[in-house]
Every structure is written in structure tokens, then in C-alpha cells.
Image (tube, rainbow, N blue to C red; front, side, top):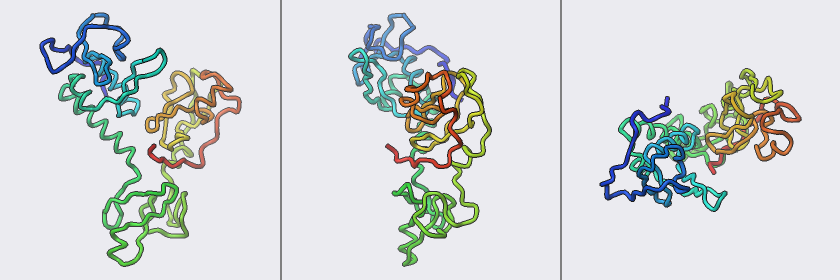
Amino acid sequence: MMSLEPEVEKKYDPLDKSLKLVTRKDDLDPVCSADGDGGLRAEMSCGHAVTPDSLTLWCRSQLQKGIYQFKCPAITEGVKQCNKPWSYQEVRRLADLSVDEMQEFEDRIAHLAAAQSWEIQPCPQCNTSVERKDVSNLCVRCPVRSADQKETHQFCWQCLKPWKGPGPRSDRCDNDGCVDEYLQLPQTCGTVSLPAVTGASRCPAVRACPTCGVKVEHSRQNCKNVACRRCHVAFCFVCLKLKSGCIQTSSPYETCPGGAAPRQTSVPAWKGK
């Protein structure tokens, strides 16, 4: 589990000529707001300044939310976020990451990146990496095995058995035991109540994100809205509407007019956008 605080306070070396160091404390410090020490800050590539501790804590908080591509959160022009990307190499250096912190960050980044590449997996017969280009079709052709056998070799993306039955299909093939594991859990999980949300009880404990289909659980704290760790879209855990739509009819701390949405019978395909 990720630690919440660095063990030792980090400080920039004032003699380090490779860093652009400043002593200001103003709106150019996007992630550090409470230290009050007037200490040295380093300018990121976007022009906003950070301390090594504040940058470490900010990036760690993003990884905990499932976000592994770091962008500057500084507010510019009063209401807009800077949102310029920070490379991991820049973060690693200006956050002054220790060896343990680098291992922690890189393991988490690799895990999150792999989770977004789930439309590539090995052919069950020849182990060749195969990309599923049509995410609405479970019937996939292995180009290598088809070339070797001089005939089309198709397998089911879901159960990884040789394709059986008509196609294309998005739910299952005709092999016994071919089930959508992503859909199985939201349909069979228990129920939860959201203590901070008036009237929100007996809601399925696991939901599939209505935008990308990844499984999401509620922390049972704060409001009914959650943010998907993969596509980062915010939606209501109770009614499954996007947050922007749900707040038109109810507050974040009261149940939706139509109550909890039923258990999901379909999961949207993730298109990686």
C-alpha cells in the first residue's frame, strides 16, 4: 500500500545549478499551499513552481486515483487549470524520488498502463500477441496461425476457446462456460448503503463504469459520485448517470428521484480515448 507521507522532508540544494529555483509562494505553486516556509521551489517545464515534497504527494495522490499521466493542476486565468503534461522523468527528478519511491511509482504506472491495454492478449494456440480492433466483436482472428494453417483460425476473446457459433457477437460465443467476467460481478455482488447520501440504500456494491466498463466500487464516504480510475469520467454510483446529468435533478448527498439503477446487463466497450 502506498504511504501517505514522505518519511523525510525533502529540500532542494540551493547550489544545484541544474534546477531553476525560486523563493516565491504564490499562484505558481499548484500543489503546495500550507507549508508557509518561503523555501526554495523549482520551476516545472510549464513554468509553475513546486517543492519536492508537494510534487511527490500530488503525484502519489494521482496514482491512488488511477491516473498515471501527470498534468499540472495550477489554476490560471482565474478558473482554468494549466493542465500541461509533466513527463515521469521530470517528476522523478524534481520530486527528488528515493529509490523506494521510484520503485513504488514505476510499479504503479506500469500496472495502470497495462490495465488500459487490455485489447491485446496472446492467441491461446500460438501465443502470438493479437489486437482486437473491433471491441464490439468477441470473434478474433489470429493472423499468424491462420497463415500457417492456410485457413482462418478464430478464437473467442472472452473464453479463449476456438470460436463456436455465428458471429460477430459481443456477448458470448456458443462454447459452454463463456461468460463476461466484467458483467458477472456487477450482477452477483452484494449490496451497500451510502451513509452520507440520504435514502441511498441497497445499491449494488460493484458497478461498471457507464463510459468504459471498468469495475468500480464506492468508498462509502462522501457523496454518491465516483470518478472512474481508467477513463476519469465522474458518474453517479446510484443512478449511473454522468455526474453532469445527475446533479440536474438531485444534490450529491441525496438519492436520485428514480432510485438506484438496476444491476447492469451490459458493459460498454472501452475504446481507449
